[in-house]
Amino acid sequence: MRETVRQAGRATVQLALGAGLALFSCLFITVLLITAIGTVTLIGAWLLPETVLLTRRIAGAKRSMAARWSGQEIPEAYQPITGTIRDRLRTAIHDPSTFGDFRWMVADYGYGCLVVLALPLWLAGLPSDGVRCGLLGRRPVVLPLISRLADLDAAWSAVLLKPSPKALLAKRVEQLTQTRAGAIAAHSAELRRIERDLHDGAQARLVSLSMRIGLAKRAYERDPEAGRRLLDEAQEHAEEALAELRHVVRGIHPPILTDRGLAGAVRALAATSGLDVTVQADDLDDGPRAPVAVESAAYFVVAEALTNAAKHSGSERASVTITRTRPGLRVIVRDEGKGGAATADGGDPGGTGLPGMRRRVAALDGTFTITSPVGGPTVIEAELPCAW
Amino acid sequence: MRVVIAEDNALLREGMVLLLTSAGHEVVAVAAAEPEILPALLAHRPDIAVLDVRMPPNFRDEGLRAALEARRQIPGLPVLVLSQYVEEAYAAELLGGGASGIGYLLKDRVGRVEEFLDALDRVAAGGTALDPEVVTELLTRRRSTPLDSLTPREREVLTLMAEGHDNTTIAATLVITERAVSKHIGNVFLKLRLPPADIGHRRVLAVLAYLNNA
Image 1 (cartoon, chains in turn green, yellow):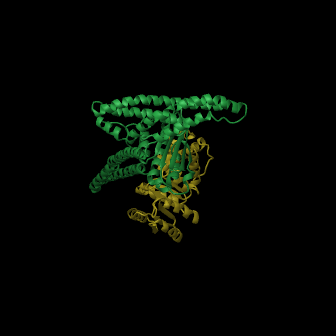
Image 2: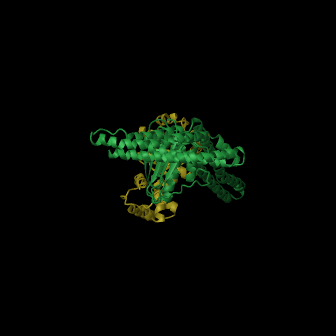
Image 3: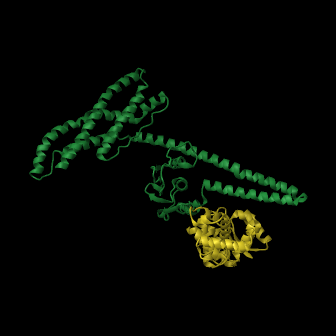
């Protein structure tokens, strides 16, 4: 009985909060009307986007309230309102979620007062359920209805606030546009880096190598000793050029990844990282291989994470776990270091550093999370979707 | 010596044949793809096989696998594996069955003809030739190990030893006497707490095993 009363109490609070919000949004409708009139008369056009933003906040509050009660998240799909006043106005009007939110607000005006039903239920329920439970030993009947009311409130909210397929699609397009732009930026930065590496490194060395062979040919008869020295130098330059090319190739696509697949490449990486690394990748030993782009991204995430761990974390140990999941590939790298890894998304558009990793994963529609509280440990997790 | 070469790139293949024949060796067979390697080795039973790691049809690590398979079918066959890049993991696999008659070098090293021919002879005679890049990786990756207690000179000696060189070569390379080399080696084994090893590939193996497990 005590639990029933407590539960009913919680439901009442939930309903009361809902009513409060409904009341607030009711007041807000007045603002809305003013804005609408203002917009029509073109005086208050700047007000509309702000109003829409405020509506989103109110709807967001309702979403989290309902989610707290039912334990089920209600997704939201808003287009960001940014840019010039014209852009903002256009987004505010065209975003399908705007209409959805207003529809909910009007409906909430009605069902937001469900709390008024709670009062009679309390009055009737306390004595009747008290008698049923206390004296007859039966289950309470009336008080749980208050919980059902809160359930109803949450369910209606979920239905009304759930983004329409159109809104979800719009959000998805927005997200894809963003990650595609990121992917293109990362890709061209990568190409520029490779071009620069080749130009400054291997290419320059080959030029100087060719030059030295030319000089050696001239010195061939006149001064054999000088010719020999020039050839020695030429050979050194050839070897340096080869070493640089190897380095560039590794940066583009590590050969061992082609040879041995992700598990083998990561194990090799672990062995040379300078840390005591345990690799858990048995999942990958059998079955099909992930697409090249996914393997490559996973490899570079692990490489970067281990490099960071070895350089900055102060940890002696790390672990790498790679598992197949239903939607793709999950990579977790964990060290035992002091944490505090920078999570800021810096301006580096290349393939290096945490921002580079994030972009690389985002380009494949994956998710990338890093938790690195001060005091450690640092855990980097990447989810890369792919079909198996 | 009778040599079998496996190399898919025609340019490199011709260069290798030229180099080996000019050094007085006989190239008895040339394999341009992975399926040709084993039959050629079984048919000719060469003194040494020089294999490229990446070969058709899949361009992965066919040469390496062929080397391991050949050693299984022809025990003691000296194998020199060449590659555009070296991987510690591959070195470990090659040496897994013993370091005798095993070579693993970057293709770049072929340019240093004398050193390359020397490595070839060493491997054919049952010795070891390990690329300096692999050894450097092995030596530098660990933190705070007994390796830190080595003097720079002892480190140099250890490096050359791991690459498979004998005392005479080490002495010549470092421009010191062979007595000094023996002394340094003694110190290295003492500091790394390795049992005093005899000369030859067993010594290399001891050193590599140590480096691998450090």
